[in-house]
Length: 314
Image (cartoon, rainbow, N blue to C red; front, top):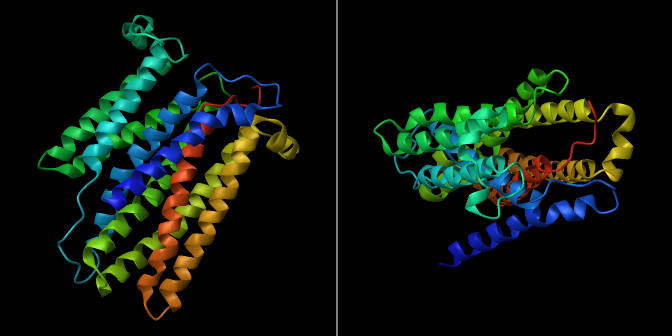
């Protein structure tokens, strides 16, 4: 009961980041966010989190197959709940698009039929349907097939983030797709790995699983960093980066995200050192738990970033 209360408290605190973030980030910049930016940011963050959970489970279960003597006991899957939550959040975002971008004040302001008429509307519908199909796959005899609708969600998010009016939108969409995929594997994988270790107990197989995850996570961190830097430089040319990091809302939130990722990388390094040198490798779980919490904040900040005006004019 205490653990559930702690989780609910952390979720509530995390929701404050996208809800209150736009007004704080925009203060003094002279920029204006779209109406309902806080609600949109929250829904985007929920979609990202709903993608991380099942992707991480599939990833860690695949790693565990190669661990000698791995127990057959698994923690309860969070994929069904993630699919339901993701479906609700995607439906909320679709209603925002149907209402013409502001968060609708009533059902009468929503034109669901008009979603098919725009690119953003079709992508929103794709995410809604993909989460619904993912939920059905989880409940079927082949839960691994959910990887395909989850991939559709990632592709839709990548395309949505880069409209056709942008310069070389396919490059931006490709970078976002790699960034989102690697981030989902990193955050969701670590969460499920720690849940699995709790179920397995202090076993050699648990330490081996965490070690396998840590080795892959190094590459994921490198990919997330590289694609993030490249994407930022596409939106903020090198000669304007320093100024925009403090004078624009997008730059301020991006700077906060960079600092958070740096902190996460430090925690990951600490966990990796314990895995290699500590007498009990499972002591690495302590910094890894802190890393999961920090990654949760990064997801919330990422949702906020998508709802802020992009500073560069193409």
